[in-house]
Length: 436
Image (cartoon, rainbow, N blue to C red; front, top):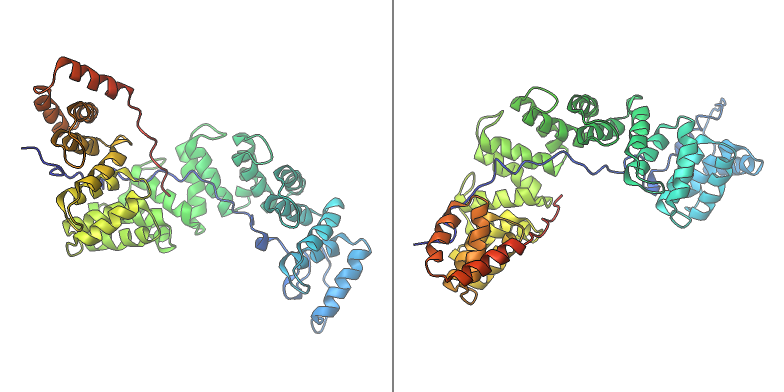
């Protein structure tokens, strides 16, 4: 007899996350993070000479003094006044006034104001969003050596915002700030070398810059460094070091690291095998929405590894991952509905989830779906459709599908076989959803 779900493939060894390729906007791309050079608590601009003062001025007198200087054309005062209005310190928050005074300072060549004006254009703060203007002002500040502007300009070139996408320019600007010790730039530069973007792919250089960022506590760099040690990429493979860096990132809440740390405990790599610890870290990542972890946690509950066996919990986590488009979870959820584990038995639901996974190219799901069509479970029996799915699963090396195909072939006419082969040939898998 042929059974749906008799062969469960647990993909713990295969669900390995690749180096993060999304470069986050690290250098104050939020309006609240505008550089304020000397506004907080009466601290003066780095460009303004300090004066001896027994007691801080009251807020209103301090503001009036800055306003007077700003109106007199003092660029430092204009920059500080723009920052005050931007974040609502010593003055009511007012984006339009912030833009007005920041622009005045920027047009006088004030580097900090030029960077902040770039941020305002980038975020549409007090004006319509305009990436080209953002790039213009970032460039002016970057050429004066403002590190944050260099980082942001690198991101604009990396993402093609306001300028044609240009990885070489991105690398150029990331390098300038990375060499000054900026962890975010070091991380991004590591990613660029890892992916061969703007530079020849070089895993050793990737490891070098990733290490520098990780040692400064950059969480995503710590995760990536763990992955490099795990795979022996740019350095000798070392599971203990992988666990060390995964742990640092996981403790900072990086879901990818939490999931990968769970895998290390599950497989006993770099640490003694410990299913309970694996469940702990899978749970942390799963609760953040990580689909890999949600699926793996479902398998732990289904099999009773590290937790008491609980089919309802397994269904819960399979469902969360399946709804994100994760094919392995969709197939597993189909099996639960087929067998009535954790949910009432429902062949129609089983077909639904097998289909979603099968259409993404999941061979196990394709085999299961073929059986549903052959037996008329949850769908009208259709030997041509069944044979089509067996063909595709068999082509991926699924042994059950190979066997099922051979047995079903005896029931088919040459026309039915040819039709199924045509359908299989025309089939194009749906792109798997990217899961973060």
